[in-house]
Image 1 (cartoon, rainbow, N blue to C red):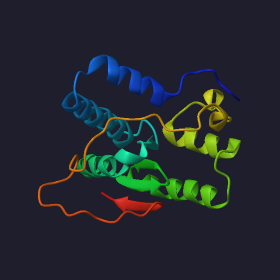
Image 2: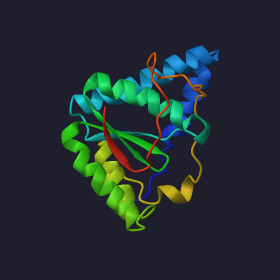
Image 3: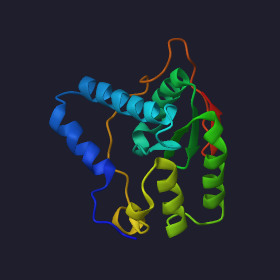
Length: 166
């Protein structure tokens, strides 16, 4: 099925632009948004949630998500440019998503259906041709290199397809 709904990243960017005046406001907005995603996963409203920051903010966003998921007892899973969060009992489902990617199934109807299911999107609303409409990630908020980093925390190397207990 295909849908004409707007892409959530595009809507997010428009809301940030409308409601924030400066970079500090945008960082707070981003932290609140990610916390909301963690809250719905922690409460079981959906199996997982995914954030896809632009490349320049990937590591800062990953640190922020790592901090937030640790507060909720969740796991973080990095899959390419996507950062997924799940409850520890949902990590196996994220590993299945990684296996789909390993089988060259990215950007296929099966890939989009599985991702949507993890995020709690009703089957009848899944856009199986999402990749045909949106090729590039929306430019998200520039978080800066220290955002989401705990005091005294050292830089760590990242693995693209790794489930991390937070």
